[in-house]
Image (cartoon, rainbow, N blue to C red; front, side, top):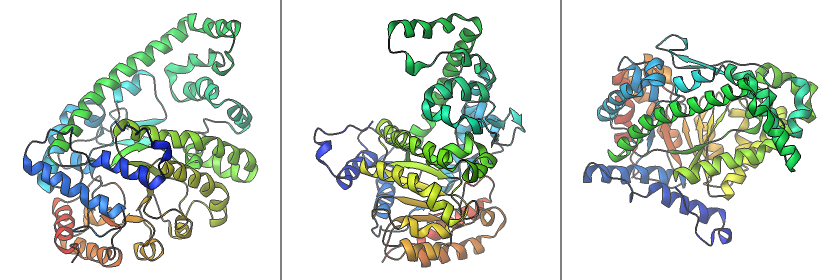
Length: 446
């Protein structure tokens, strides 16, 4: 939990960021398993703090997104992750003891039982509509219809309750009978709002939500215990919260890819208005999450801003304006946006250079890292683009060569974290060890 000091309103963004970093790096409430674990934790978190602040740390820090790899190397898959979290504990502990990474690695947690209880259909996952060894798959659809923009823009809360939830969860279909919550300002309106709650099918939907909540809480109780154990062993976590780019929030799970692509031509004004409306909500999600966790970083996966999805002109018109607003809003609150730029962002680097220095971390998937360093080297911390295909099918020698190329191009002057380009599901132990061991030895600043 992050507690704002009494003079919070008098502080600037950099001062607020320093306080959040202090909260993130604090070890006061951690019961380490040993003095050595505490020393490792403090040293590791110091590497990342220096890199984010655009300083040269003792060596290049390493971020290995390998949550599913920790499971697959132990013969586990999505079924165990989503339904039997107690089984993944030993796999995660063995992964950390074997590789001794710089940060804690956790698989993406989802309570299969909780979601099944409400008939959730927005995703499929291992053990439920996917093979047991698969993890997760999104089901795209136009859950916000093209002619519903006016309704959505007028009252998004009521639209989510009456339209979105019933469309993505079969057991919540009766919620479409509820009244408009935002209009219940007088006694007669409030009484009218209460009446649908007497309907048997609405009550069943509410019971399903309660049961799903209980199952999800039980699941996260087990997952959270693993995270606390890894921290006590000396492995710091990076993410404090999660939020999204307004265009992605609209295009991913409301309009869907096909819907949002046509909207950029047919419903331009509605798209821009909806993105604008989402800005304060996305800022709040990032800030409130870090307030609760005490973390300093807000993860933002960038899904539809890649070079291959839209032109530079479309990016400037539809994506960047509200994306930038969300980032600046969080930066003002001392949060460090952690941007996972999926695909290639080669055409977006000049946009990124508009942001304040040392206030963001850019995790690139397939972006030219040498060019990213050239354009952004004095602006923000960068990481990424060590191909996961290399870790899965290459050799230790080739992995070392790729790490050397990245370090030589990106490490000088600091502001660099070595990382694989996207999450690692399958890999070779010897290749992962080569990545870690080589960087620890070669990535030392002199």
